[in-house]
Amino acid sequence: MAATTESVKADAAEAPLLNKRNMFLGAALYIVFYAWVRWYEGVYGWSAGLDSFAPEFETYWMNFLYIEFVLEVSTAGILWGYLWKSRDRKVMSITPREELRRHFTHWIWLIMYGIAIYYGASYFTEQDGTWHQTIVRDTDFTPSHIIEFYLSYPIYIITGGAALLYAKTRLPTYQQGLALQYLVAIVGPFMILPNVGLNEWGHTFWFMEELFVAPLHYGFVFFGWAALGVLGVLNIECQAIAKLLKKDLA
Amino acid sequence: MSASQSAVRSRAEAVKVSRTFDWMITFTLFFVILGGYHVHFMLTGGDWDFWTDWKDRRLWVTVLPIVGITFPAAVQSILWYRYRLPFGAILAVLGLLFGEWVNRYLNFWGWTYFPVNFVFPSNFMPGAIVLDVILMLSNSMVLTAVLGGLAYGLLFYPGNWPIIAPLHVPVEYNGMMMTLADLQGYHYVRTGTPEYIRMVEKGTLRTFGKDVAPVSAFFSGFVSIIIYFLWHFFGRWFGSTAFVKAA
Image (cartoon, rainbow over all chains, first blue to last red; front, side, top):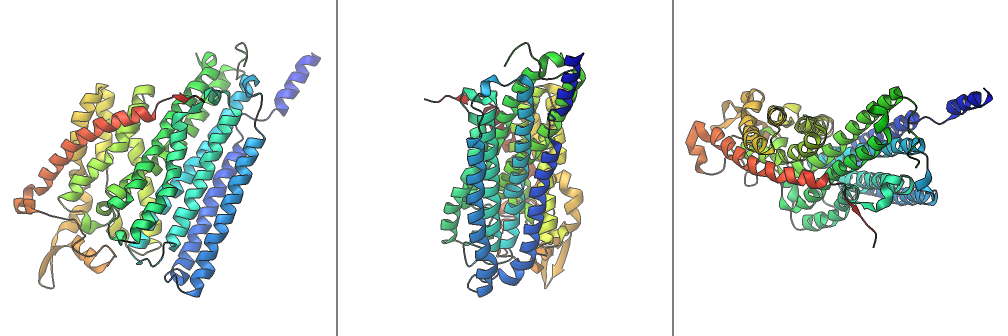
């Protein structure tokens, strides 16, 4: 009787399998932050972002760039460092229930990656097209680039890297090596950022905003395909989760 | 982990856990695929999709289905062949349309003030539905590639016709004959406005008159078949569960 009571108490005190609060707070963090960024673009894109030689451009846009560089490097260092430092050194001996809980947490990270990659690859990338069709650039660091290339891309890289690190350091599924398609899904979109080098180099020769489908942009296309690596992650995860649940669903 | 221990405490909990994962997976797939598909699509066919004055009877009809069938084919190759889920193409296309509509409204209109009836995206839903239905009914990649791929190209123009038709009526402006869509482009000057860069109605196919769009759609369908095959196998590769072992 006493043992049963203890067991019920333990169940009640146990952390939930899915921490919904973390999931919704995480999603809200991205959405509210990017809503603010979009507001900033709307106000200071037109009032201070048209002429890169103007003093107000330095104030509102170049300072924004410098600040985001510092914050991104710090965030990546702290987040990735924390995930690595707090890794589970006995990951192969966790209970099945703990493993299931960690798969849920892993999927919270993947949801955040989905949101981050949506803003980076879809929202701010196409937004860059309409800005360049409207304003002729006189710098590589246009208002749309400062947000697209140097804010939204690093954010999805940091998020994706964190998801991969979480999986590698806490889930038994990923202890047999490096999951090829997980690497593709994270490293491929990451390579879009270095490809900005090619893009900016090319734009110093040609005004390619005349043509969004110009071959100069195909590097982005190639690395964008790598997002499909998420299909491999899906397959690995479904196998792992099915193994944990199989006998209960049969 | 001990084989005798269970991760869940009852069958009901197992079902609940499974359903919760379904939602989390669907959300993630939708947005990650959206990101990859959108960046691919905007940089291989985007100009024809952004502006109504690029939505002509020839290159718009030819290029967009060819570059648009890629991700639907890849996603189908996993969702159908591994999970028997018959909505891979629709999932991809809905994602693309979501990304495009949000952008056209909040950014093309909301930031740079192009009216939405000048920048609305193309509609791929009829082709996506046909791709998924053919795959579901036939369970055949070859049939889906040949019939579905062809239909994807052929259905694009009719699927967009009710939307674009009012903008293709002819008007005379300053002594020149053009379409209403051309006139929109004339008034909304862009850095891509110069006529030497706007790839519409090129070549002598225009002299075919009313046959231009069907011929373009047929050609597009032909190439879409080949692209479907190719991307089906890309999709399978991306779905691999291989691990790279440390040396």
